[in-house]
Image 1 (cartoon, rainbow, N blue to C red):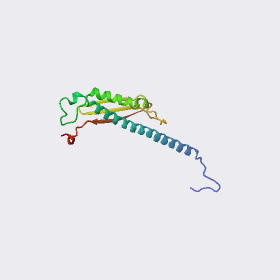
Image 2 (image 1 turned 90 degrees about the vertical axis):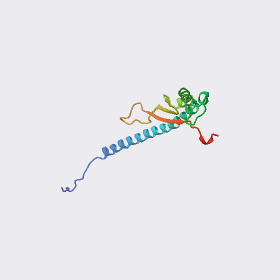
Image 3 (image 1 turned 135 degrees about the vertical axis):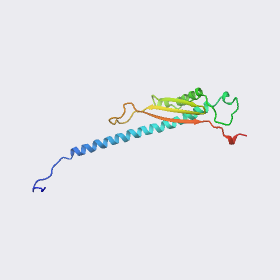
Image 4 (image 1 turned 90 degrees about the horizontal axis):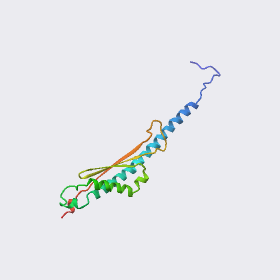
Length: 152
């Protein structure tokens, strides 16, 4: 088609600019929320690892562990002692104050302590369609091993 003399193509770029601005705002909100969730999970990872180490350490202590000799395998861990040590560790580090609603799940499988921490997350920005009450979880585990080289 030929253009007629004096006729200009006209149109508004405002809807296009508004559309791009909305897409950009959604991308920014997603990145900010994803970063907040990632940082919370990283913090909970360190906390779960520390709690598992503390639970394994104190769960493997006591006369019942050493009564029959150390043996040659990993030390058995008392589930109730490990669970109590994890709870005490989280309280001593102020985790319950820093992460209101924090839940700890402790499981002992003979020689290994597993700690799973779950904390609610308040997202800085709300992306449409995101969960209304998101939570973040982290898991740590520890084993108390006997150093065979250090034994006489």
